[in-house]
Image (tube, rainbow, N blue to C red; front, top):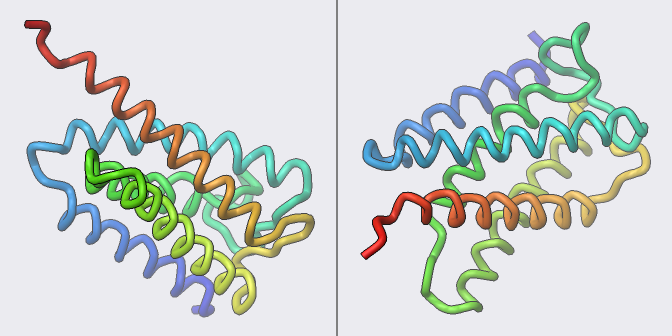
Length: 158
């Protein structure tokens, strides 16, 4: 078994455990909606990036079906978005809210750069770490806006 397969299997296991531990039972419905919304965005963006030859995923699940990474675009990034949104520091000040974005985007970017540099899972062709950071920031922002919009609809009108 190659190190890439071990890394991808570890990502699936650790991400699943993270969701089981960090998603409260009473927030499960919200977590599912966040997951699906981020999944929609990352799947479309991931397909676009691969089709334009900006990134190449060399080792991937369903290699015969798609050139994008099912692991990252369809599972890992949406799962991280769930944690990002459920633990968002709402009302704690703009600086703390920005730092929440900054930490999540930076940690995920560093992890992606490490994977890109030291494994054959993905390769940046016409892509850089700061484009990853910016796209993560934008998709986290959009998922946050969707989350607050969607679940405010459920609040009863007094």
